[in-house]
Image (tube, rainbow, N blue to C red; front, side, top):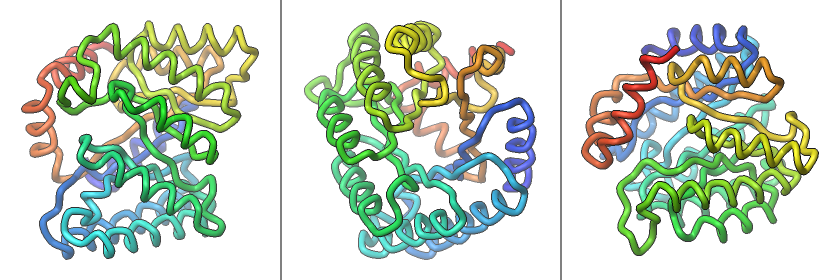
Length: 271
């Protein structure tokens, strides 16, 4: 998918009553020139979103912005992207990567959020399978930083991450409850009907308005469920990935956790 195709898909998704997060696939660049190219593309995306009056924001990975190559330059790149989003009234989601990057990513998000005028324009991602995530959620909520909660896509060792689905699910539900009661607008990212049902049940029980949070799903995955949630009055944001790096990205995900790719393939066959 090209930039224009991603923007066209965003417009079609908006027409269905859903907002969008656009993600240029890529991570672990090996030189600053690659990071600068990524930076340029994201600035163009932010401007295109505004010019086309799309209901969308951007999502990026820090290693795609050169974190492994030159942290100082990477921080400057991302800071300017957030500043650009602030100027046009938009938002940047900093995606989470594998556990070696967790602390540094959260530190950078906090730093960016704390800059004058940046509050509310930059957010984090928390992975429910990590044992540390409850502490991270409570800390970020205390600073009123927006969170995208997901289960987690990387292969992590048992000493830092739950391995059983039942354990991950239980933590996902507990973290969701904290997020929904925080008074901050968060995203609950899941395709799992059980997690969705648990979220809706808790929101209704606590009289939390549907406008106080949103569900998030991948483009092309369970569109039937996405449309039903919108029809029922719940907010939905669709993640639209694009770019030339889709094949190496898919291969890395497949090597780490084959079940993730199998899940996506099966669910893309369902409308």
